[in-house]
Length: 261
Image: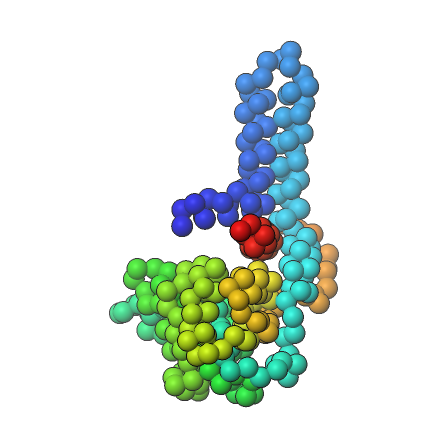
């Protein structure tokens, strides 16, 4: 996980900008006055780092990138989907119970995946919801169990859910979920995850041999209009841009793994 965290930082706009800025400043400090071309290049590198950081910290640029990715996520309307036996609901937005401290599942925006899974079940588009998510922290239960608890609050019977509680990455979501799906003699699934995450997740599931019908939810940017204040940088936009960059880089990493034997 340390390696993944470092790589995620390096490919993020903040990591790239810091690398350019720090490299430029180090060269400016160490290069002699006679090496003017090198110093000029270092200065431009630092300026490019600042410009890159400003660009992806603006909501306008961040939303544009996310909308481009979300446009490839597939339909969000439940009625546009074909029924399947199993809908796989990916974790990523529900934190587990913490005895004596957190007595109900803690949710963020990605918990829309759980809500969307419940909608699929109620509409008769999935007979079983396979909840995929392992233990992210030692002091919390697996995320699949937290999702199951949340679904109980939404009126979904426990008998309609299956748990995959080993995965901690999207790649593992696909691998361990595929094992459960195949045990039931199935190959085709409906995949429920956030629109920003869908393209990469779908590729991972197809890579392990499953036929995937995407059921995207949690659309953040698609169809959103740009307003004047969207050109004012914010830390929230920078964080959202980092998530988008992670999806783009992750998608192409899966593509490369697919091509390499």
